[in-house]
Image (cartoon, rainbow over all chains, first blue to last red; front, top):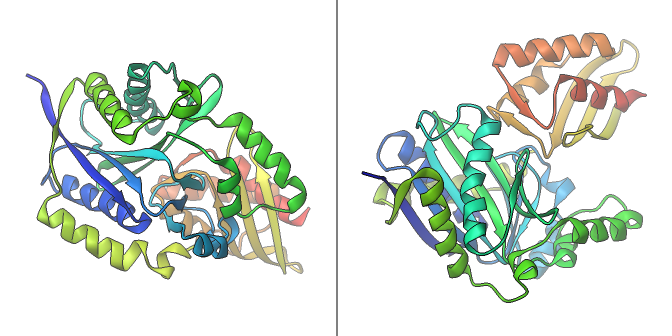
Length: 254
Length: 94
C-alpha cells in the first residue's frame, strides 16, 4: 500500500504569512503531529524573498517595493533574491530520516527536484536538474529551490515560474551601478524562462498544481491526500508571521 | 578601518564581505558575511563571524582558522568553502 502524504493548497498569502506557514508545518512535522507534507501556494501581493544570508538593504529596493505594493521577506533558507509573482511555489516538509530522503543535502535537492521534473514532463516540458539547486529547460532556468534542515526535518521550497517579467524584477532589486544594469537584465532574459514562454500559451496555477501533484506522487511513490492546516499549525503560523517574518528585526537581520 | 569585497566564487555563489580591521596589527575586529550561498545549520555563520574576530589577515592563518571553525560547528557549506571565504576576506585588503 502506498504511503499517504498530506497535500496543502493554501492559496495566495502575504510573503510573511507564506514563510510562517512553511515554518509552522516544519515544527508540526518535527513533533510527529502531521504526515510528510507537500504544499502549493502563491503570493499576494507579489513579493521579493531574500536568502537567509543576504542583506535586505543591499539586495532589495525597499522603497520601490513599498511604492509598487510589493512585499519582501527574509527566508529561513539560503540562496538568492527571488521575485515571486506569476509562479507556483511548492514546499515539502519531511523527516530527514525518511527512507525517500537522501542524507546528503546535495542529493536530496536532486531527489525532490526529480518530482518537479516529472511534473514538468506531464506538462510536455522536458526539464532537468541543474546542480546545486536549479531546474532548467532548453538551458534556461525555470525553477529555483532552497532547503533548510531543522529539528531533523527537511524543509525545501522553490518556485516554478509560470510567467516572468525580468524588467519588473530588476526594478525591485538593488543593482550595483546603473552601468551594468542593462547587461544584467539582458543576461537574466537569456537565462530565465517560464512555462508560458516554453508552451507559448497562458498557463493556469491550477494546471501546474495538478501536474506537480502527479510528479510528487510518482517520484516518491506516495498518494497525496488533500488536507488542511491543523489548529496548532494555524496558531504557530500566526505567531511566526507576527513575531518573525513581518518584523524588521528578522528582515533586517543581515 | 572598514573594507569590503564582492567576490564570485569560481563554480560557487556570490560572497560579500564587510570587514572592520586594525591596520596596525592586521587583526579582524568585526566581519559580516553575506551572499546567496547556503550553510547548514544557518546560525553557524553568525558563530563563524564571531569566532573570526582577532584572527590575523593572512591567507594561511585565515584558512586554518576557518577550517577549524567549520569543523568545530560541523558546518556544511554549499556554494562557498574555506578557500572562497579566505579569498573573499583577503580581497578586502588587497
